[in-house]
Length: 224
Image 1 (cartoon, rainbow, N blue to C red):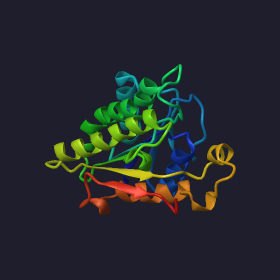
Image 2 (cartoon, rainbow, N blue to C red):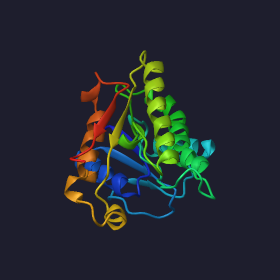
Image 3 (cartoon, rainbow, N blue to C red):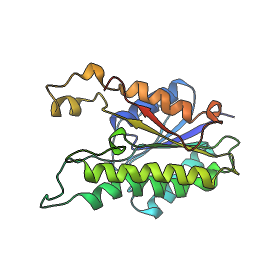
């Protein structure tokens, strides 16, 4: 039976790269995104306008995936956001970062778990951050929220050891995107991580071949 994967944040640069690579592998793919409209490869279930900070919306999205494909084998939690700001900023973004980076992953995971547990090889792959291992100036809100993703990954992996489901996270450094190039014009993007390369790592962790790995925080840092 063809494996089915759901990708949150599927309209973003990394989400699109993962979806394209998954389609190339012949997988059933559903992309879920807050944006109402976004590009997705042909044959993909494209669920836009989904607010994953709302637990009910997450449940409805997973129900739509099951309605289309009948089963779910892997959840890739890519939805999230980034902000650089110091702690004394007039409009602190801490609550927003936790909502975008941690609450979305938690809600999607809780909604997907009953279905993933029925898979012979269930997988959850989260996106943490290398920057959350040791934070820097202006990175407090983002790093704290991604550290929460790391702890969610580790705790859930322990909780699910009696099931078929493994839980791991990738910890990228800087992705080579148009936005990052614009924000860091003096940096060398050749050292950064290509979204297509990170997609391959994530799809390995989402595959049956990764069954011996759970609770891992996998650095994917390029040459940074």
